[in-house]
Image (cartoon, helix red, strand yellow):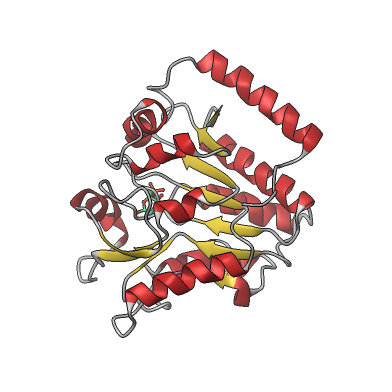
Length: 269
Ligand code: GLP
């Protein structure tokens, strides 16, 4: 696990955006794994700015989102499809036909939807760079604590903590979905690179468990300890419980030098 310590949320976004630039310079047809939530919004703003300055193009990319609420209309203002359109897709040159979310209505068989999503990711050659946030309970995507570390895309019931954390986005008269389709932990782990972004004090404990706790289904993000190319980008508050910060800074600088010299490792999955 590589840990990059940043001063603030703007720097977290800038560092993450530079990974996209490196990736797309090396592989313009990259397959991107995208996330929702408040954390990646600044990253998406940076990507839009880079696109407007003609420093990056998504024209040949495809994208797969981590998750989508169960049985929510794409046009609903709180669907993750709407989020992605508003925060990113509508402002860049990605082909809308190649942006995928694991949408599942009550008319669909969730098991078949999950399997089809997995097949589609494989058909496109697998995810090159997966963006993740982290829930205050250590979840990634909607893989809540106790999720199988070997799980694949499927329907998950959300915990009370997650419902509470996300309730700010729903008005009193809107029904907040209690289930979601999410990539599984094994699906996420298959990405060639993973960038997990965390900002703010409310994430500090989950970040500590992820980095230095045991690998455990109680903190799904801790599985990233087993990934060959997992990069965790933190602001000061999210990193406040992390030890050995000067070692981490040195190691991150060395890793950056290696990537500048040899490029990203985008070989076979
Ligand atoms: C949500 C999403 C996750 C996200 C997390 C944190 O429920 N399913 O993908 O990483 O919670 O969200 P935020 O960035 O808003 O704190």
